[in-house]
Image (cartoon, rainbow, N blue to C red; front, side, top):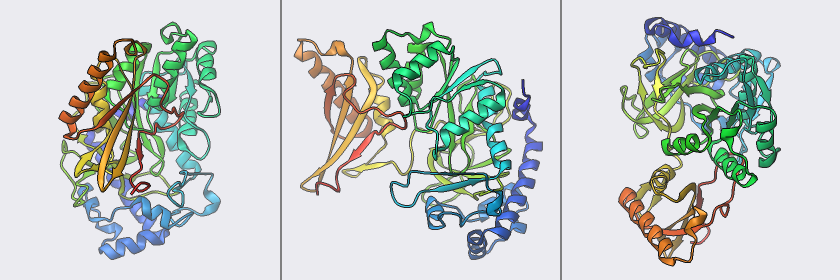
Length: 436
């Protein structure tokens, strides 16, 4: 058993001394090697030597996703190109992809923090871990893979779209898989397919799931655990900072511990950029402390969270971030009302007979925004009793309006009717620019 988990219990004072030392080092590194950062620091009137305490980081400028695209592909490198051993990138569906580069040092750190995340969830070298995240330019698959190998566990590299859902289930059963890594929406889909195949996950060796890459709710965790008997863990990461393994929840499920000896977190007011005190909700910002290939300074994630520095009941001293349930940039504005998909999900999962599969369709008719919520419901709801469906539809509509203050058209569909994905679920279809 590797003893990396001991780093999670370091005394707070010692951790902050280490953070300050590493912050100074990374600021000096980017100032000396990355023209973008030299220019942005100079424009802000700050130099690395101005960091005398952790609070001084607030003096330094933010990095935005746009900055990565503007410096595509290698304009933010802080190491010579010859030292880069891995290049990952986003899909680039909105223009140039976001490129992230890694030295061997970075790969080793990435494997370490994912390993610590899995240890936090209770895995050991005796486990068999099936990786259902996509391999390739997306960081999820290889990040989970390297972390499980660093732990000493056996790895089943099933990937996402490359392997059918039926085969994923077959591998779990035949290979005595004890842990699965994938998006929560894909695992919900696996549960549905397994039921059709006559497979009960409670009859397999599967005991743990590490779910991330998209926001999900406590209600979804409850459904997953009740239907499968596994422990559902929330693993958080983002490609721009490293990939999966930036944070993970422990057995207390009371926030996710950030591996802050490598990733320094802040919470800011998304409108003013002001750093907010512990416990206040705002936008999550990260600074790389140990990455050498392409470290980012004060990267704005657009994820909404909060930070708690009190020691956890598990004994870990690492700061805890609240589960990310929404992002500031996936917010919909409908008839002047701010709406996040997670709000709708929380309403749906409180209603018996409704599945976690839903889709928000936004259209515009004569300058008026219209919201349709398509919801999959249990097969038994589709009976000869028409009134039963109508009552369910009315209940969902009433609860949605109570939660978000909007009237929505509710469309009930049978299980399997909404499109499934092996990656992140597509919850929102915004057609307003297409129909005027």
